[in-house]
Length: 368
Image (cartoon, rainbow, N blue to C red):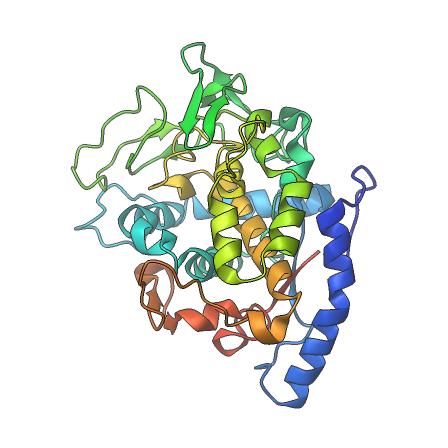
């Protein structure tokens, strides 16, 4: 199933994923024999690929579906989000008001898995997209991301860097300063150069982001998409870091903490933590604002990669790790995920732990 473009060699995480397929095959064989796969098989599973491994035509189809979603009418409640103008905005609006539950210890992985599925379903069911959502392999952006197929700004990229903003020097994080990658201004090339973010900001990380007319952030606040496509951020999410995350985390609490927390290593110049690094490979506004980050389409590539890392970790020992829940801070283990106007069903958190048969088989994906 792995489709390669021939430009990137397999990294250590790719190789680990390939060797893990033996575990996945055995797990699915047992699950099917027990009648617990809900119709999901490896042959039927949706295949999520790295953007650079998709053909030019596949990328164009994805871009067209994204542009379609940016024009489709909003379904968010107008009394709460009068600023939401499109179906694409609906996801930003939901994230704005539910960021807490999406990012707590119980919700981070499964809630975003369901959020990503809802977005993928909107692309497929409302805009005719035939494929599945791509991911971004962070390690591929550790040289010069502005020259990559994802960010080079051509017609089949996801848009380029923001215009240079000499006033933007970088982003202060708990792991230190992520120095500017040379952008910070409006994106002026690629398919989304004319796109306007409509709601927010919530917690802006850039200067001079226009204030929303409503204190809730849900009012109409059109503004350009700004980015700082940043190799310094990408260097905090190299393949060796992801490999260590997967292979050295013996339980889900360790996996969660390692993903989110910079290591205590003063000699590491890029010690931002993988989660933070992934968000700020593009950063900007709305993408760098933790409340409205789905306003940049790159958000979904980042969270697809996080889901991939979680999935590979689970599949090292699927019998014991599929249902492993982060148990930190006293969060409720039996919570349900309600995406409101984004999806029809409210589902138990544990249903979103199983990427190969959970939620009645709606979760049925592999990463290659």
